Image (cartoon, rainbow, N blue to C red; front, side, top):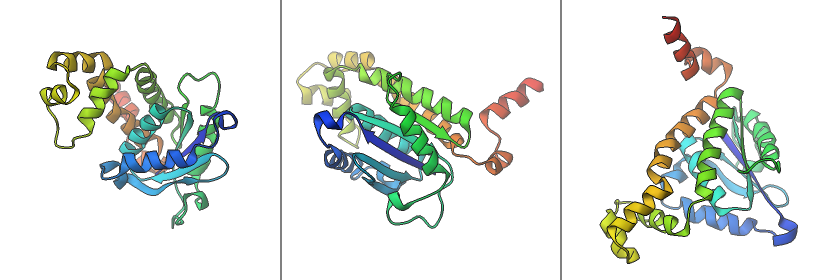
Length: 227
């Protein structure tokens, strides 16, 4: 399981934005598959910090990248065991994932980080790799233009799957412009990378017993090299 602990940056300058954050997350997850992976929704823990519990790595990836896009937040992800039964409130929860999420958000606050995100897990190697993939996606998304986001948002707004010509008509631009914006935004590449981040998060949350039962990608590679 995964715990996300997210802390606001510069609250003394911009003021408390927690309620704004909670509204944004609620709107983002409403009616989407992301909400299915939420065990306990985000809530304020202390000060300008929020926390939530997830049972689905894909949901964690999507939420993390959405929060990075919002800007102004340090994102910590902890993967591991959550003590059951899980309390109704995330802030009352306990377990390894909570401890790791705390360590992760503290690391994410480092001024040395271009992308304010960190991952910690029971499998430290997999957590570091998940962090690397998420930081790479987040770093590129931060450089995406408003025009690129407009096309991406138009595509994402319709669950039935808009065609590029439909997006072009909606935005009042040509289909060629839509295609060019998507290429420049590397949107297809991001969609291809997100499952890799989710898989690595899944590996990061495994216990030693899990690894004994299910070999990791690294184990599989080493076995192939020996044969």
